[in-house]
Length: 470
Image (cartoon, rainbow, N blue to C red; front, side, top):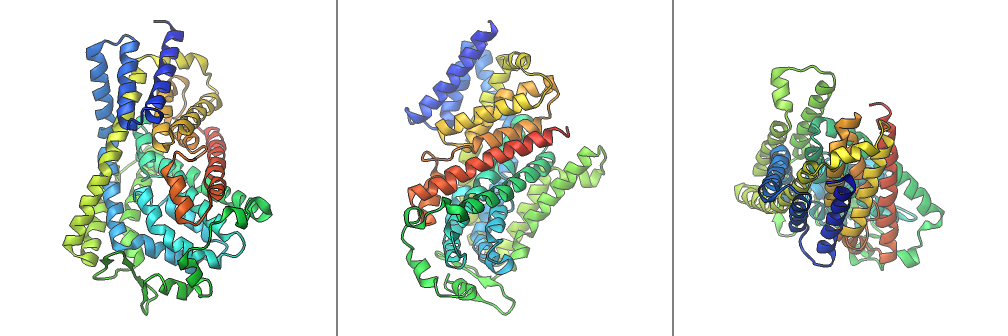
């Protein structure tokens, strides 16, 4: 089969997947598998090899990241149950002060809280973020809303343990230690730079409270005249002599409050172990014991077990079991979607796309990185899923990396950057941020759509800069 035929078939399959999701209202995971099957049969792989390739791709990516995603989601579920998210957000205003709160909010949600399912993280954090609005001064709502959007969307595809970052590492065959180091570097820098740019824009007339903000919620009206400490008390929390906060979340009442730092310590320790493993890999050195502990599946398991013990002490075994059951339910959909993306990635490799695309790219890394960014951006605009668009774009360019000497982590970062472009009305996160943070749809377009699009471009530029050193 000629090169132009394979390129045409692949493009048609991708368009078909988008059509199934948008017009056919078919679930993305099912659409991706149908697309993989269609690509295999259309490029002449045959029935047996096509089905084997789909299953092999599904299994290979879950072999790489399946347990890691499960451990991360379960850890996040336990942290959610202990009220740690609520307490963390509540502490940001007291610790960092008004001017630095948006940056702390973005970084915390884009890093240490990424093991929590994004929608859950947003729903839990939004009430306390709204309580911060009256103390933020001019355009406070806009700055906090953009910070939340940046933390959630940038973190999910660029920073381990975000589910998108884990999936991209699996598709590209990048070690989690390396993804943690470089994804964290690019991701945090992207959040800080973008938040600075958006804050400057808001203060120079880009935000119009009359048109961009909904009427204040009841809780904001009640806390407008309160001090930060009083506002924290109004959340349903009680202060302790040590300055900690006992939180009531819905029907959940903690039986025993533990220090906030202690609750996050196991997960932070796990991330530290993986970072050390990544440094040792780059330095091409290692130690048997440390190497074992730094293995991602072991490191995240240590973090999960540590969080489990602390949650048991705080909540009792019944609440912990309930939280773990919720975590298993959440992780199922993520794992299936990730596996479906792996099936398409494997089929693209089998179809010969790698050899074909390799002919169009020189050793100049900018061309394939710009290409994967553009593919991911177009897919995200059409489908509305950051994870799906990033995995699909990365899978198309994965075979090219080895041929042109491009480090796979750069393709993973470029795909993640492109997948953030233009978060809009097809995204559930868009509507959650719009409604939960008191914005009009016009306001959400500014803080979410434009804000995260700026982050997409910033992340691409940082990735291109990083490529100069590889």
